[in-house]
Length: 69
Image 1 (cartoon, rainbow, N blue to C red):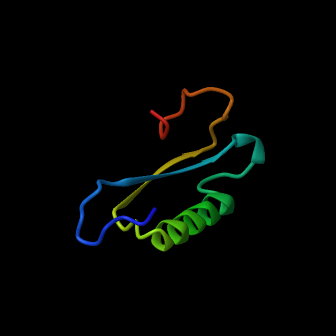
Image 2 (tube, rainbow, N blue to C red; image 1 turned 135 degrees about the vertical axis):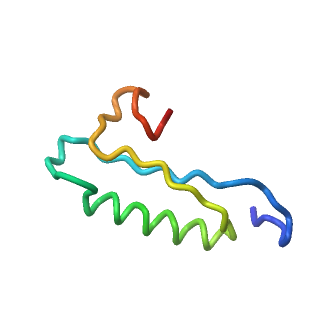
């Protein structure tokens, strides 16, 4: 569903996660790729007020992750 023009709908949360099991230090290439893909999809949907939440190095087996909180 496309949002109406000039109609504020709030922010769109874009969430990226990569487990420490990937063995990379710092922000990994996969996180960069996720950000690019999510930004492109949000733009296609007309969502311009976006905010990233990133958990790089945290397991996805539970919800105890800073970006998820």
